[in-house]
Image 1 (cartoon, one colour):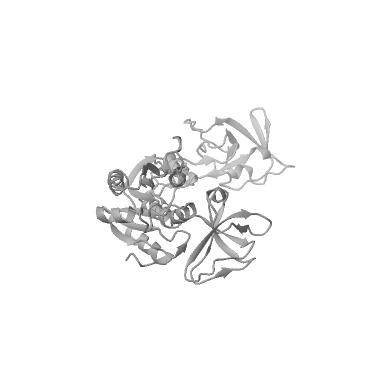
Image 2 (cartoon, one colour):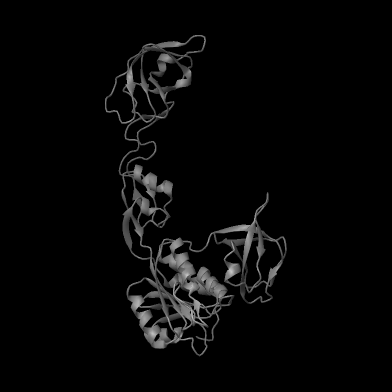
Length: 404
């Protein structure tokens, strides 16, 4: 299996077949935003709970103002006023009106609210200069949400507006799929935790910071660790982190060099390898397996390969854990500013780039293929030359993945 290179499609299919969403938890309405619903939800109340006014104006009987015009206004006597939340009810009879504010319940007998622009106040009376049809400016009981109505389906991502609708429907704790806790392990004797002093030949562990930042972007919690190139240390770190996380990501030591221990250590730990070679560039050394039924993603250490492996394989897998049905980066269409391709029709090639905007489509400008971290940090999108194609031409309209 070690010599087998899977296509990107095959790798993603294996990932989707072997990773399942985590269990559910109940969170507050605000904390439910951007989370994935674990169950179908139904309204528990009518909203509004009574017929209510959509405007400031006067509640009247529509038959009283039938035929009213500017030249021949109708005079009505004002009995009082009602505001939102007012529990007092006023019974309207022919020839009377009630001053009513937006959100207030409609007084008994009234069947229309006349907006202020059609009304002239004259002491305790009003003059209405327009005929308004029944039901105008009235939100019926349950007109926004009716009791027992299906309002949220399982596997749906909850938007801020949906959270507000759930509140209006009588909910306050929402069942959502748990967000995974991710163990991120940077391997390499040269790595130093940011904030500590560097010795000659050492470098800061930037990859794991990048990966943790992406996890935070999707509201996942990360546990970070740095371990030297020693099989025993890697063994102990993976085992300990696996016990308290939902998934593991290793960064570095992913290939077959003398000090690339990750895959060998995982074999000793008894993982079930799904793949460990993909026909993608950069990032061919990315791997995935299950350790105690939890996913473990192997990522190479070079920043471009590390990030592409994460964004194309690990991030979709983590989003599946969090309940997302269509995991991955958001995609838009853009026009190519220059030719794109690496000449390998049997591989999938990824290119970092920037997006410019004009009156037509966004324009994608690719960076050099071997961009390092300093240039990748400026990238705003990723374009792909899919397997089976060698090159995409200038001006072509293609899908691109958004990074920001």
